[in-house]
Image 1 (cartoon, rainbow, N blue to C red):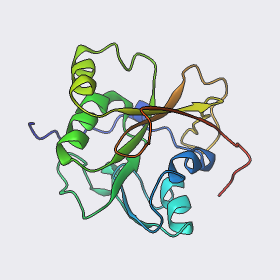
Image 2 (image 1 turned 135 degrees about the horizontal axis):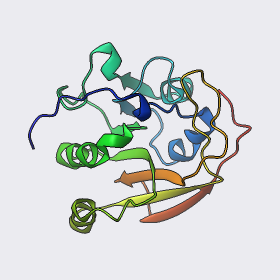
Image 3 (image 1 turned 90 degrees about the vertical axis):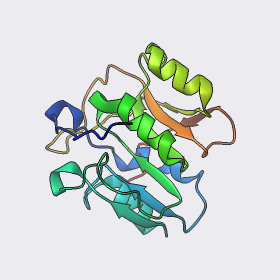
Length: 174
């Protein structure tokens, strides 16, 4: 795969609320090392995982760590909320890395792309469907109202079943 220089786009930056981290955390080995390649120290992933005994390695394009240019750190899992505009490229790199991963993504049209269809047909894909919809936060860390799309975790090597369901507890806070 050719190296991609990630170009930051404002519409790619929606922040994950802490309550959306807990469903995936339940499926991880305690004390594991997690790489969060699209996160800063303020990320809910970094905070929740760290507080719950995981070792977290994180990076973000705005702090100079380009997921497509950075060497993969020694980790057990790769978990994050990736840039929406690069989901094909992110998934291709994750499968090439070969580590268990979980990406919180918009499920709308996930199987519409012929490229993704082929990728999922050839490799292990798991979906952790979340309900109700995740109310992502905008730059001011305010929850987005009336989220128009369903999202969940697209995984490989994390879930026992290829399709799992989890109710979100929006009361679970940092």
